[in-house]
Length: 302
Image (cartoon, helix red, strand yellow):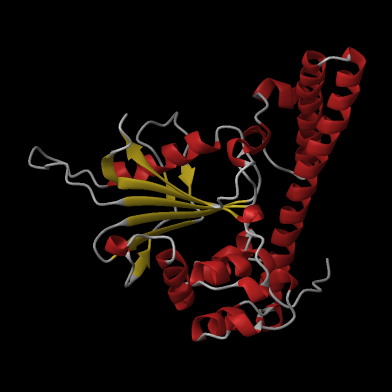
């Protein structure tokens, strides 16, 4: 697949790790994360940690993070790009956050359970269903009690819903605005916008130039970009198929209940078609389950 864009897409697996997951570019990651973090945990420096974790019990699924980092004071940061909506996405985030918590346990009777803060940062290329009617693209989540008071302040989930960020170049005022504009538009740009003239973005745009990559890197990126586009097409097709079939069923029923039933049935058919396409792409059953929410049996029957 020929590469026509000038800059790498940061929402692809290759692009994200190339720009933010390499030691030479960790200042890019630090600058971006500091726009999301509270003052008490602003990052001065960080180290990249092994991004794959296995639980103690063999039967449990392993956790693989896009990036896993640790700050100078021991804070843990899980940073992931989520490219498609998944069933149980929030449960998956909580599950993954448990690994850096468990990791901190000290063997022996003398440990006092003094944990370092854990942050899960999700850059989402979709919108939560329950939030689709509001314009808030940034969600910071902590454990709170019935009086909305923070019960535990060392576990934080930060989600950015990129599709809700619609500012144009001339509307960028904060660093947060500029970084989100980069995530949404970098791959479509042909030059560095006037609003992004700071040194940190100069480095970013240099690191993102596809022409400077080795032939092997370009081939790897092309594969990553194809997967990203195929996945988006699968998700869009599932949604459209579900919507069309659902509306047909709803029209036949003629009433709201029938329409809702049709939408549900249509969605299932759309997901099955999406699963077929994912199988053709070579994804394993577990990954297809994660993306579509279908059962293992349903997928194996396709």
